[in-house]
Length: 174
Image (cartoon, rainbow, N blue to C red):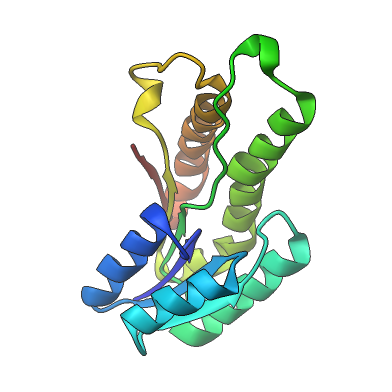
């Protein structure tokens, strides 16, 4: 079982990678901090491969998918944990922050899903995004973190409808 985990150098991504490796998966993790990736990779051991990658960059995404497929001899799952969080009220929101969070949390993850789809079809694999409980109980000042998650939820419904016929599942975890 080969799994690609974005944001694997810390937090939910690192925890996900460790858990899946313990369950027998070959895990490829990515992030922007090589230091963090090395630490997690060493904790996991031989069943983990890391790639320093900025998922907002197409070339990095292409290398990342290629490395994951090579390391795992295919790809069974893409788990999108990478993301930014900004907590500001509407009156203090800045356009560049809004663009950045949507590019990182939504667009890049969707592009990874698209770019890994051919491999996931071969294994009848899964696309998973980490979502937010904030969708169900809105925390004040958290709209910049919650709005991308709402977009992801709806995009995943579309992926599930389109790709379910090919055996590819699409889900979120909040």
